Image 1 (cartoon, rainbow, N blue to C red):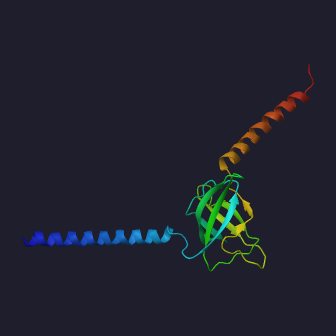
Image 2: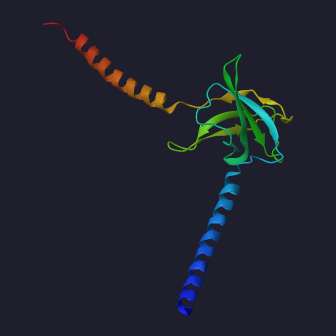
Length: 168
């Protein structure tokens, strides 16, 4: 009986350790992803022609450092542009002439909003809009155009060479 009790204590301690590690991981993951967004930040907006790969919760970065998140996305039914609401950390002040671009972290990485601060002495305030934006690049179209240009160039060179030969 004593051996059975000792075995159950060891299993209980191992189970408690596993449970503690699981709670730590969930807490760490929640804090790391900041699902609640930037708390206490100010909100600005930006209009983009294409927001592929961007959704609510996407990072907003300046010089590669996270300064906010995308808090809302809507479609402007008049211009058919995507309007993103960006919640920015209140300690980060951005000039009025700041520009925004949707950038990829790499070939397989996700997209994020990259802000490039300008030199205007006046700063963006809550509710202001970034006017200079660049939408997401469609990688599949880009790759397709490179492939089609390469194939088309070779066949045009061959056709040009055949046209240049005199007929016999």
